[in-house]
Image 1 (cartoon, one colour):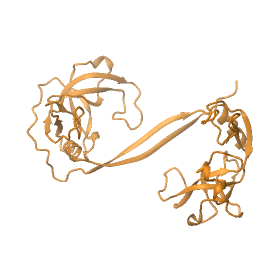
Image 2: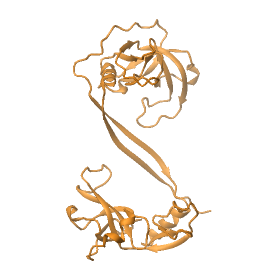
Image 3: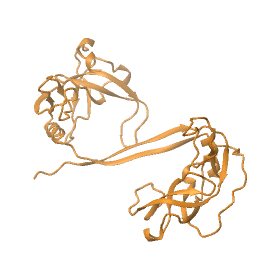
Image 4: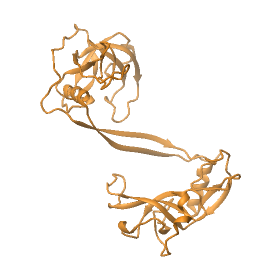
Length: 313
């Protein structure tokens, strides 16, 4: 049985957003060790607070302080924490209804083991040593056997309120190509670009997908395309990626290889970024031992006529 190809992949980017008045007060409150909820038109207190009533869609403004103690409503044990999670050792993910709230807040519960956790147990917030106005200011929850805390009245007004947050988004996964993608990769190892033709509409897809997205039927007929192609559209990249040793600005483009009915994307090199254009004719540039072209460069041919690639935009 042949070895199955697989590769670890990571998608990571910072997500930046501004905050409305309710979320601004909630996150600034966490910085000051104050937990604020918001009261709905029906009188329920939501923690975490929402900007709009989930039932009536009315805008909400009535901020309500709640306690830093609460009750676990449900939980799940995390025996193998992933990088970036709240605790490095095993812990429970728990939904905690803080005293004074009508909804539950998700957080990590620091407990010695799953036998020490139960629905209905009492817990309290463990505050982070350094707080910046983010949900991570609640480092975790911890077991608590004292009386309910009584929150002090608060208007929700703070000095130097938090106005925006940057939340890192990250997805780690393992990719295993199927039969069509494996055939494509095998051809690239021989410095050839191979797609597959749909037996019904006769379109050639590169990279192949194993099935025609238009007709919905399997594709198995291999077709070698390129190696030259045409830039159909492009963008200028001005932000340097941490894992790419490429100076900015540079151009990433969709390239319709000769004989293909689907444009692939690749970097354009060998030309100043501000001279890349739609219709530019390009060819692949390989480096020794690389599994795919490093980039595409101009061929020196006249630009392709717009009508020859307009359907591939």
